[in-house]
Length: 350
Image (cartoon, rainbow, N blue to C red; front, side, top):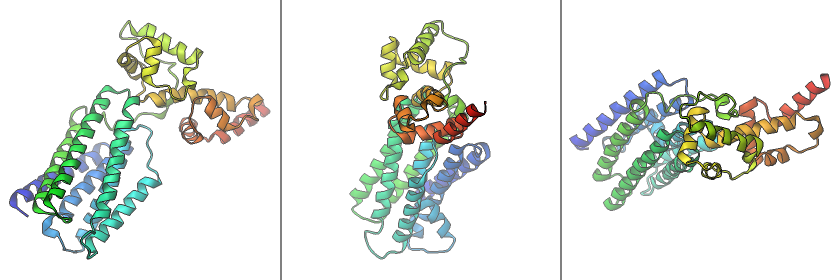
């Protein structure tokens, strides 16, 4: 390992370590903050565990670093999802990907075969690809302009890093680490560490990790902030009329562009109105607030006891029962069945 590469790895390690400490200090109460701290810690450990100087070394003190570093791509996927999706919760595919990456990392460290790193790298690329898909797929529903821009910058930075390291690895012609690929990987880690530092800590302190209350993410827009732009008053009234009177939220594929066109307003103005006036950062969650309100009324109606919950979910605009159940429980703390039983029992007692 050259002196330059050692210096780059050391710089990236120090920056990632500092990020870990700051995230644990300032954002440990936020789910995304804890995931981000775990990711930066794993990335720092990977810089040490994968250094050419330790290639073939199986010292006991390296084991924790290699375990944390091996699962980094899965933690990256989880971290990205938590940063850009206010209602995200890790599930078994995320945990399974992490366990598989760690297992494949151990295999690549000990198996005496030339292709040993390919399974781990392949799964790592899948996790990173899923993270980028989450970033880009959710952009259309994101109502926060700064976060929408950051999605594109983030995807471009990570995509360029992946493409560059893969190209160097292929060009070097080896399945193992070469001096060129290893140095490029270290430099890329330093660049991404700096990017994360700017994105998470410098641009808008706390903005990326600020928790959003579930009530604010799902309630109908009844209590708006005072109108700052006089042009937003008529637009707010038209929006309420379209959703409350015409029940446009029942349309499963309704997007913000289609809704803006229906209201005769520029899309950016509608995004700004829903975000800044009504306090929502996600358009789908905003619509789900109306859908859940209607579903709650239907489930509490004694005259609809024979109507299947699936029918109610579909009638209110949900595409399937799974998203409906998750959104309903996030809003009420109960499953639809539990809510219906409790409401009907209360009606009988009354």
